[in-house]
Image (cartoon, rainbow, N blue to C red):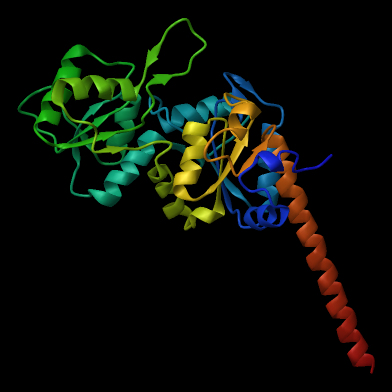
Length: 312
């Protein structure tokens, strides 16, 4: 079976270019639902893939646009499915927002936050002060997120502070959060739309996929160039668009939302298309092992040449 079966549907349609790009990869940014699991069911190829990456010395991070849970909650969720991840391997749009503020607005520490208690706790752990619903408790900026604990008074208070021309950041652009329940989960983008109607302002910055700033924390932590990162996900308009925006390698898996027909007609096309994460793992593993074999053969030839000259 051709390991590059979808090469004619991919943006990178040369095997030489594809293998050159793959051999640069030092870190993999993994989408979660639709990529490593479906709902609460872990895909059978996920654990072998992670083991292969560790064997190859390629690090990975789990990325999510959903900021409602704390990092610890996400780690517990992964652990319940058999993935023993560390805090540095988990990266949410809330953490990306924290990193963005620390880098670009280090003087801003007082925030009015529309977010779940878990998310607010993540900000407080990092030294931020969450201001109350009180006109005398003045913040320096406003952060709006996917707030499943949202109340009308806090929505109105956020609108008031936004009208005062404070820095206004949204953690993610999603209009709704996918769910298998019989309900529409109004996400951060829709909350921001209501605030725009009330205040006339859009967020100054929207973090989260597909914004390339979602990768800044990972790049800084691991000292990486964007070309050394592969972003793997099941959505064209978030995961793959972020890869395109960040000039990273974009890998589409067909285990989630996007079909092959949609992928081959998208603009731009994904750099790489694979059936699932396991197939991409095998692709990398074979390529690295082939390269290792070639290097070993070269060393053996060099040793033989050296021995020959010593004999002569």
